[in-house]
Length: 320
Figure 1: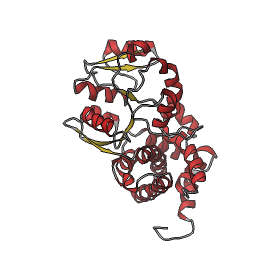
Figure 2: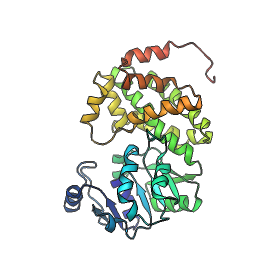
Figure 3: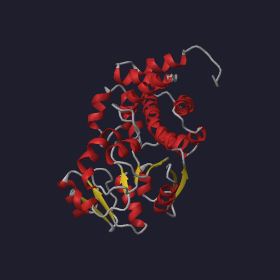
Figure 4: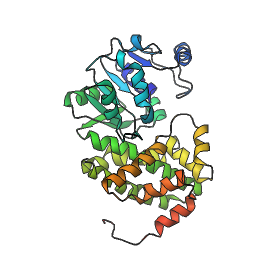
């Protein structure tokens, strides 16, 4: 996603430097003009440079974008915090909840780098489709209205429309929790449960996401929007979705930890499932789908057994 966002910004006339820790990989990308590991087959815009030299990369930064997976944001930022200019705004595209602290990505950014305007760019955004310039809509959420408007301007293109809202809490929670449900959706695909089952999962999964979001102070309409229902649908049905793909292999009978080792990139939904269980207990929110998924991923429960246990729960009203 870092490479995709860099391309969007460069296409709009920005000079973009992508910082990475691996000097060999950044040099290779600059030479080949292609990020072969994460986005093979797409030529980099001429306005993008990759660098492993933090002082050079950050010295003249006027706008930051953080695309580090949630569980690694703190460690990565601690390596470069001395090079980041104070007060420069930062937009996060990470979708998760830090395990040890239960902080959202923008909260981690501020905790490590100090007070600065922050925003979250979220919504249905399969990286390969954006790289192919396929039409999409996203939402930028911030409590800092000028930053939301600036991000809206910078990321908007003829194929990408950006909306904005002020619900940073809800937008980040929706982005994190949809990955949990996406893993469950993949498991259904892996066991061949069918489309009826997946539709039920998405619908009731959104109920769980909304319950926790409301308990944590989010706005209800966020979960019916791009960051909620929109992102959930895309992640659960796209064959390119990493979390769904991970779940599909688990549903087919492969051990979760073995599947993780074979995947390119981070499966955010795996770690987020553990965080969600702690948050649900803390806020007194019932999340049976997430709880069942936790048992499958971390306690060895058979996925098919878990599905039937969910179906066999005590009947209740839909809005209960």
